[in-house]
Amino acid sequence: MSEPQKEPRPLIVGRPVLLVIDVQKGSYSEWAPSERLPLLPDRMERTHRIRPLVDAARAANIPVIFFKEEHRADMVDFGRELDGTENVHCLETSPSTEFAYEELDIRQHDYRITKRRYSCFFGTELEILLKGLKAETLILVGGFTDVCIHYTYVDAHQHDYHCRVVEDCLVASSPPAHEASLKAMEYLQMGAVRSMAEVMDAFAAHAPAAPATGA
Image 1 (tube, helix red, strand yellow):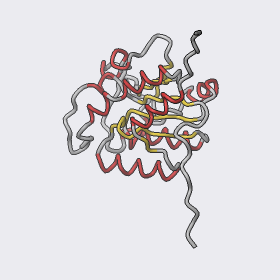
Image 2 (spheres, helix red, strand yellow):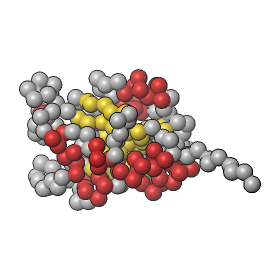
Image 3 (cartoon, helix red, strand yellow):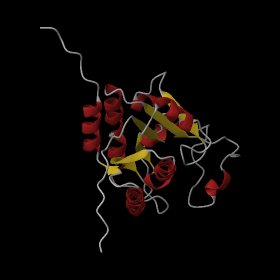
């Protein structure tokens, strides 16, 4: 007997929040693909799609939270992060580690969180902030799909949020890693993997109606 087919939930359930994960100054620099990081061939195009999504969220009164990964110059907070393929990265002394203020139009009163680990939940104030925002759906963009996006997604799933990732606004360490992580995330929540066009339409539909004008 075959299992009953599940229907994906709507893209936005309840109150949405856009998480812009590790889109930092260095994200807008050209990176040469290497054996360690083959990257996605359209990495820059994917990165530049994130700003219009941020603008659309603002227009729809959807909160945006910006994240950057940062490590102290003496590297005391790396932990086991360098035991695998990763090299030293995101040092606080590097200009490329800073928030992409101009590129993403990050403003003085925007929500900004600095993290020391891959997951945006680990050792940060994110859960308190999300409770304050009464968030129900988290929409993730940025990078890497197979690292910080994936680990944040899993933690969000285990905190019972509805989780969505915008596939064409994600960058990854390699095409196979990108696809594997998307598949794993979709396994946890059907309909998790969405396109920028779908999300833009959902943001527009979520926007508060304009006040009626008198005749």
